[in-house]
Image 1 (tube, rainbow, N blue to C red):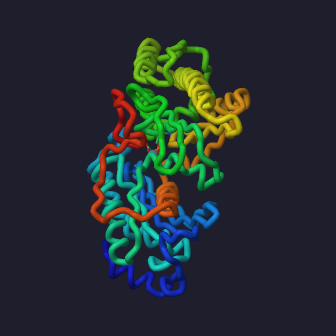
Image 2: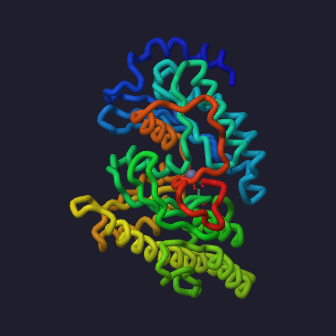
Image 3: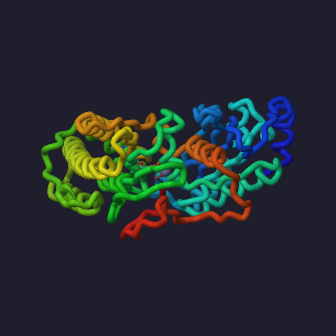
Length: 386
Ligand code: KG4
Ligand code: ZN
């Protein structure tokens, strides 16, 4: 990181926007946080303001996708991802500050994803944040990427704790109760593939490109969801866990049986896949909602939240809306662009953490794995991405 370049570009604004705050005092205060996300294939930088009453505002949110760099390989190549983060992160930090009309000295802290994720990329973001924290004497907050997803609804919709959370991304699919910042209890999770991964593998099998979720969703819109009778794995079991690898295998067999595939076959396969997914999600979420409701005091609101990249899926959003209406839960899902990876979610999680206590030591490590509920028994098949 070229700190001198930062100085030159930002010094004047820094003075203009310098704030006079006492960090971590007992009084609630406004916090402006720079957030760095680099755990997978997006270099994403944002500046977020958390006001003293807990409301959030995004001042800038820049996302540089590496999709084109990875597309020829049909998936994210960790070494290519890490190098691309190094190439762009300095410039994007400056752009995000500029767009937010703030300098380093106007910040109250710098947050970076410090896990889980592809370790090379995580290190790039975390080291950049450490350099900024050191140079500008700012608190550093090492954010769990999953916590970033989990808390985004409090940035967009000020949702109060506790809430039931379905977190579904490219590397994780979990149902959790969120009691507070840093307080998570896992209710269920996938036993094998993550849901986003299942979408990506389906897209790869059908040559729809990467990332697969949006492509499968688009193809499914024009397809017949009843043409292929794909399995609903773990449906009927009393555990709120998921399994998606059998669905993927069944889809492969259906594709092979109908080869060569015509465009309409592909659309029907996608629609049938998505119908199986929404069916299973509805049943498992209904089960988790019953367990969650039983654990609440009578006067506590029943809140349900979905987060992570798969939460951008319209069919899934609609099916959860119907489910929550039926079961008396208040559903909140952040807007699609804040469901997929972004820097605002990291800045916001950093702000939430800093509002409650001090930042982290500059020696904190980058972590490839970092469960939200450290007490939950390990499950087979946890992914590396978030
Ligand atoms: O949260 P995210 O951006 O990155 C991770 O932390 O993994 O999630 C990315 C995942 C990918 O697997 C992608 O295919 C999936 O989310 N995804 C979707 C949609 N948009 C992104 N899956 C289904 N439907 C979508 N519209
Ligand atoms: Zn993510």
